[in-house]
Length: 113
Length: 114
Image 1 (spheres, rainbow over the protein chains, first blue to last red):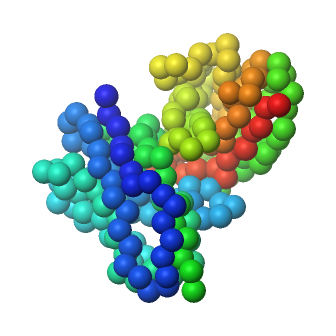
Image 2 (cartoon, each protein chain N blue to C red):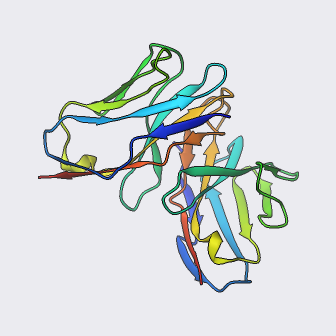
């Protein structure tokens, strides 16, 4: 069945460091791919998405490119800030609807000043 | 965006009892979902809450254990019945305004069963 494998955390970085959180997926067909973020005490929020191969999603300095050949959707940011400290979830939707999402386990990111 | 109010935010319950979690949205939405996040695990879809009819459950989840109501387009409840410590999880409500649009999540209900 469909699944998402996400880099285990926690990840601790210094401010302005480069961030990569790896995400790979297994799916039939052509899934849409998402990164969600959960800030402390808040609900899940959509960070970015890509709906087809080679699409690049971007938001708030974060980027991820849909790589069908490697079945990956790695999250990157060139210079993290303390305010980026959160839990990041990679997810896929195989039915065209974001409602039925399959999530990775989440990666907790802590950014130190 | 959609503003989702999920209650309670957390609870500690005795085994064998039941807890009902409420999800209220600030406007009508097409789809509502309930997820579970067990400790150290990813989010897992429990069911789709259907307005005016029985919920659609995912494999491994049954109505007797997780009865769901959705009386209108802005409100849904999830009940965790006859609880055991294995039910200790975070339960999340999610909504779609329309198909193929962004999914919004409530803040979750952290349930501990003792």
